[in-house]
Image 1 (cartoon, rainbow, N blue to C red):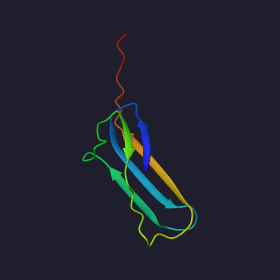
Image 2: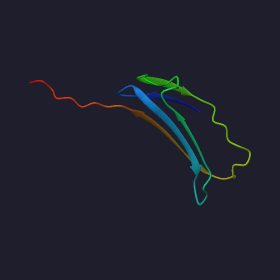
Image 3: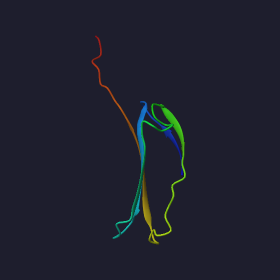
Image 4: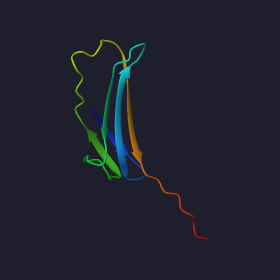
Amino acid sequence: MEAEIVAEAKIAEISVVIHQEEGGSFEITKTYGADSKYYALKNADFHEHIDVPATAPLGGYHLHLTAEAELEIIAEDE
């Protein structure tokens, strides 16, 4: 899997979820957090190999890629 991530703040966590499109409950979830090479970067070239087991049911799947970042709102001095 490859994606270019452009973030407004430093990346806290990237999560990948792959799940069956209709009716099935098979799901693959992978999280890249504080111990990953993406942590605290503002932008990242995401490149990871996601292993899909041979037991995965055939058919359509949805993929969700989420990059989370910490955000702080501060008062603007006038």
